[in-house]
Amino acid sequence: MSLSRRGLFTLSGGIVSAVGLTACGIALTSPGGSTGALLPSRLPLPSPFATELPRLTPLRPDRDGRASITVARKAIEILPGRTTEIAGYDGLFPGPTIEAAKGEPLRLSLRNELDVPVVNHLHGGVTPAEHDGYPTDLVDPGQSREYRYPLDQRAATLWYHDHAMDLTGPNVYAGMAGAFVLRDPAEDDLGLPGGERDLTLVITDRSFGEDAELVYPVSEGVIEYRYHGGVLGDVMLVNGAPWPHLAVDAARYRLRILNACNARRLELALDGGSGQVAEIVQVGTDQGLLTRPHRRSTLTLAPAERADVVVDFAQHAVGSQVTLVNRLGDEAMGQVMRFDVARRARDDSRVPERLSTIEPIDPASVVTTRDFRLSLGATGGSTGHASHADAQGRSLAMWAVNGRPYEPGVDIARPRLGTVERWRFTTDVHHPVHAHLVHFQVEQDGAPAWKDTIDVGPTSRAEVLVPIEGYRGRYVLHCHNLEHEDRMMMADFSVV
Ligand code: C2O
Ligand code: CU
Image 1 (spheres, rainbow, N blue to C red):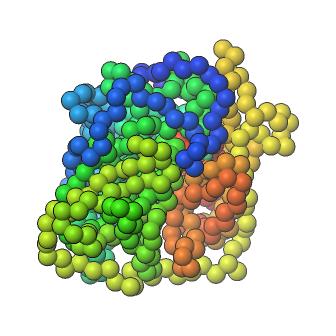
Image 2 (tube, rainbow, N blue to C red):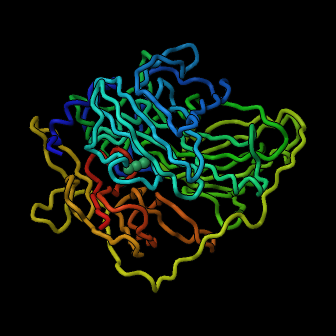
Image 3 (cartoon, rainbow, N blue to C red):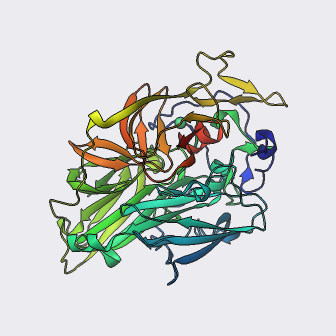
């Protein structure tokens, strides 16, 4: 924890190529309902629906519950016929999908073959602090370490990604993100679609330079001021492929959708052609199954949020095309991928009306209520500055929690293990708020649901109930717009 922030800033060059852009105003909101600025690619964008959806590579622990991954650079094909160097897990983008079972501890050893330090965090995991991926708990170049995940928690679609201090944005952008599917055999009896019809979709937006390399607006280790609100790419990738297509059976599919974008919010809908909106049946959130299915026409996902949904392609004629669209995106970014209903098929799956049991928390059990204000700059502090300048006189936005930019080792809260708290978040602009270790009980569509990231809109207030469960130790809570997180919108809390 003795690393200074400035020291860390200088480490970031080189993972992705920098683009020279003149600093101008910071983009706090974009028309698409995201906070951030669009980073234009410098090559012709690939045509939509030309590439097949890649299957994610599964990574299953061995009999002793061990698995290993290596963080490495690799030149891969993302844009048709071009190569792009990524820095990712096992040289894949997204990383391999770790498939684990509830209650079966996993020992994940991670080897860092990059020239920058990395940190691994299992997002949504209930993990002891020393294995949780605290931002300064770095795995240096050439080093390895073992992360131990007890996985004693509800089955859910989790994900893992880099969490290095100040560098999470560029590192994740360069490729350090993957899905983590935690299954519970007890859920098999529900009859939800499985096997080939249980698909994980990792959505990321990226931008490319003329040379087809990923670009990220960082110069001399400092992100361009204009992008302090967030970096929005102009190529939509699903499982690492631009606007892919997938031939599907006329049957039900379970889609585990992860918004792994740095800053882009998505409002997803299924367009069955000629304006016909297909039904999305949501069965799960960030932290596992809902109590009962919810039929909806759109699904909003802020960065780091997940949704498990079931889509019945049998409701469409064989030969028809169903497009997953993003209602918050303009032009090309308004589309995500296309499903081509290819063939009739047998389907024994179902979506039962009772999916899981979630005991609603009695608000009377709350022992402490805490307020967290997420906003640009200090509020009511001694300086009152919304930004400050670095040594070269470049201005830097300071995103803050309760007026304080992140300072490792300083707790904003010290909740007690075994108690229940109420956390209230207020915002200036959109902030997807995420806490490590603990989960949020929210009310969604009139029923309790579990989340680890909530999408808090501009000048809004959100309230969640938080059972303080798991382990004692120091964790972080932060905004999951990664450019906000890297620009200090994070705070420590210690479970005591
Ligand atoms: Cu998705 Cu602090 O992480
Ligand atoms: Cu934010």
